[in-house]
Length: 396
Image (cartoon, rainbow, N blue to C red):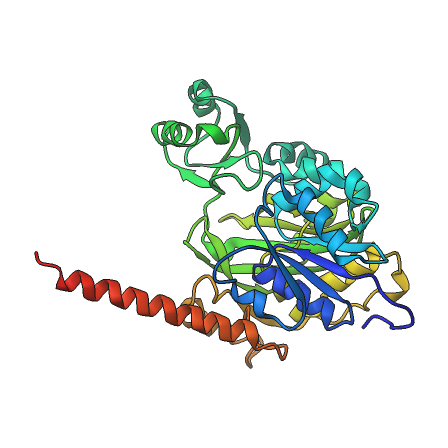
């Protein structure tokens, strides 16, 4: 817990999906005043019903409008102290980095000194260079700038390959492509998202995907945590919906080597895939923001938001002491309500006994998000039933 000997700067979580809720709860329960910027929606998302933060709704958080929105909000808040920013998406982090000279008078950011490197690492086409410097395996990759480059690329890479936009948060995250013709089809469908990074596909199901989450202070690892993906929606290249804590010294070693060539601060999550021979390949790092499953780390004893907060305000004496890792399984029942049923057997630990499950809305003496989520799902069910009934009544 943070001390209360003086008034602490407030925090602002930008973007309020379930990982934003986890960050807000962790900070508020440690005595921090939390404000949230949520994308405006009707009805508001379930997260907006939390008791742990004051929520402000605006449109355009993931766009070039964000700096202006932040400037306006700073005036409305009238804070005497600078406010600590917690971005929750790559695009939000990018907007903050680019507009930092206009924001730094009123804001604090854990990675302000390394904004250029955060922006560079967000680009998928910058990773091969850093992996080579660190001696870390990275799938054979090529940049694809135009449709005319497809034939030459196909001669250099072996199919299947995975296609990713070089810039974060484009129209798609990743597409697996099995042939040159399929590659041409992707380019024809998404010409506005070029350039792409195309890399050879590493075979393996969801449990072959690992991650090492760390907090850095100018390249020094303050604390880290390892996990593994167990399920995704959709399977293959979809967003992870089930993660487990997992001790993996090998990916810790690889992560340390990769980060050693960087001068980063703030939260970093490095993703890996293990091939059939047992070798780990670095897939991508996520920098400048918290991961979608950050609540797994928090509930396992790595209170990343509080570590980031005390680092940003310059009070290392208040840094939460590392706790022994608690064995947890995180289920994203917000995205896929059936993921718990399919993976309930994962709660049995390797040493016997049951591991504690972690859910997006349940717990923390914060019932508003759960109640709102249940109401939302009830409305969806009623509408779906109505559509089925109307469809059955229509004449053939």
